[in-house]
Length: 570
Image (tube, rainbow, N blue to C red):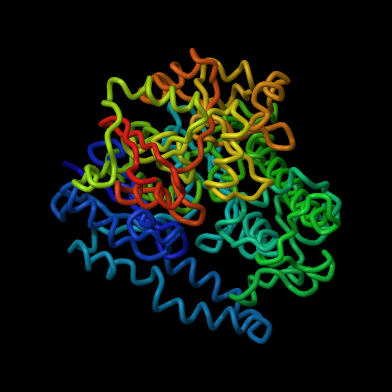
């Protein structure tokens, strides 16, 4: 048994990946176990799970790899702060404090769990970890251009790699502080949302506005020059490089008419404030898309290769990814299911695996998470309604009647989006059920639509799909424009811009394929799929989480591998 472990930690979304004997054995997010969404803490619980549940020990481990070079990243940021110590003293002080609490001491933290020799602990460059995560989801050995766009890692904010038969060369990069990711997170904070959590809300909000602030943003906040290959920004409008407290300056606040706060977000879509709110989001979204397109074209010229891997936190912007897929120069586009820091634990595990084994990893499936055992409490809190043989028919009955159903089947999903195994489902054509799920159960903002799920063979009957990016629809990697019939049959699955972040299902996803096939026969070809969690909490991890979430949301029905259950006393 040969184990390679990758670890992402200390910044946000800590996680652990285990490659065993050439395949991704398991991927575990620390937040699933701590129940603290987006936790950045060292993943002690996830590592203990590897030891207890998967028999990992110092003898089975070949290498443990951290997903970045800790000292390099810290030195690059402290150097930037000390270049203007008076202006940036607060950030410098924060970075000096973080030295004693951050990844510099990764090996010591690791040894609290597993005693390993020094030569078994290695470090991968941050952007290379992202690139290798994307490479894991490619299906062949052809040449690739890997484009990494995020906030910052190891002092870098963007990188381009040329990959040829697992030989990887960096051909371009951009340094902190100019950053697409930090630009977008600055706008996220300006609009009153939480950084590293609210970016997808900005993306959804953007469809309600017009890019009236785009020219100002392009002139001052973010631009890319294809001739020089330089990202540029006027840092007087930002604070993230000077202060740990806030991303934007008063200068930007004045220019954009004042910042919003989480307690005073405009809700009336006809108000002047909501228009400004949406226009700022639309401007940031449009500029982000333009800059990414320019970098993609620039990167293809550098490498001569149109097979594109797009990874890093910016690649989670599925609306931008949909537009990028339309570029004629792209032959194939791969966006990993978890392109952010969490998923880069997979790339970190791949790094020593590729060096030592000298062969490609078997492409991971969609569900490499653990499968917790069913506890005795099921009989106390649930009543079994039907067994596993009958449940597909019974679940489709419930959905046809307008019921909302939760799923806890098989293994957990990799990325930030539930893909049917840890989901809440309802009939996508039932407007009342969709509104109840969105507004009353999930309590989402009115400008955020829910996502449709359907079989891959019928998806082209409802949406315009990019043929060069088909596999990404399996994990909601990009949005798609709806055909006219969807506006009539399933208006509730569409955003105001006539798009949806759909998920396509294949035959090897047995439960979902059978359920969708049965629903299709009953006139329900499209279901709604949203993550099984209360807003603000991590996705459910075990049966206790299922009970707590269902009780708090008032949902009766739970689908498991063992059958269909009904929550008692709801």
